[in-house]
Length: 90
Image (cartoon, rainbow, N blue to C red; front, side, top):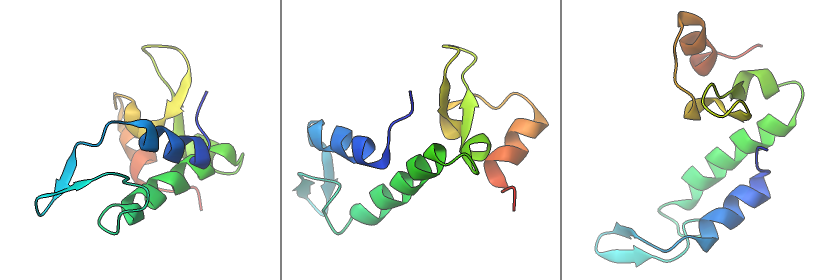
């Protein structure tokens, strides 16, 4: 099951901090100025995965586990896979 944006952010908060920026350990990537925009951007993809209008664009069935996952986590095996990851339906 694909996480909601909130579940995604919460999972990041539970991880052991191991990201440094200019020698500073970033304790929470969801709130630190150097990382929070990236986290919010990824959260938008998880939000789109919950929306039937965008699900086919941002999700794919994993051939390894047979479940729906975020598209960027799947192996691109065909030209169509590559096209879907870089284009939109609009």
